Image 1 (spheres, one colour):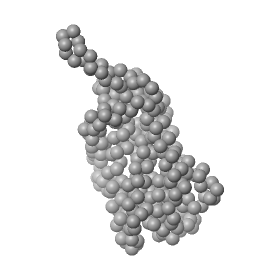
Image 2 (cartoon, helix red, strand yellow; image 1 turned 90 degrees about the horizontal axis):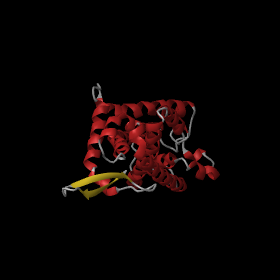
Image 3 (cartoon, rainbow, N blue to C red; image 1 turned 120 degrees about the vertical axis):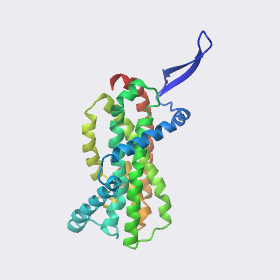
Image 4 (spheres, rainbow, N blue to C red; image 1 turned 180 degrees about the vertical axis):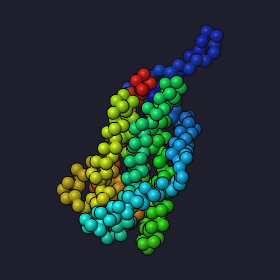
Length: 284
């Protein structure tokens, strides 16, 4: 992010001088807030483009996780007999697909956002962080629609929501920060190395099977739980299952380790993105 300073000209008129910031971490929250209307515009633009000229529109936000849930319930549930912590298989898998599909979509969208907006990046000054941030935030609309579908499924299976549901915003925030942190790394790298976008689909697929989406984290031996928690989405997904279904003990150790990893990824992602921000316009 650039630093702006005012300096008078010979005629006494103010001049805005934009210079690169010094250091690895110099996030200007005040400047980012000044551009909050631009971030809102980017979010709204992404939402409109996503459903432009689609036959069923926002129904895709429900159809994709619903069909995936059916497939997982048949293959991993009925055929492979994966334990479901006493939950109906549709609830078990849908509660994990809610945060996972949000994370996967936000990660892929934020990776390509700098390249897709290269004309804007090279011609107009604004905090470049606004682009990956808006890509991550725009996915919350799909998440909200899918979440309503999950509530309807809970009523269908007569599963009552408990006090643990109050923790859902916390785990959602962890998912947002994870997507943003990893997205900052990948969006900056993709501006320099265009083959990064070809790696991301494989990364997302591998990451899903390394996360407790198709199976519970209880299958991982207790002595390796801390190592499994180094996957930040492990704590997020198990946290969603516990807070929404409430059939298992809160995954405390897993969440603590995952939260620490999320914080490290986010801080390092912001630092790297800001470091590359000064050269992105030249190479994109």
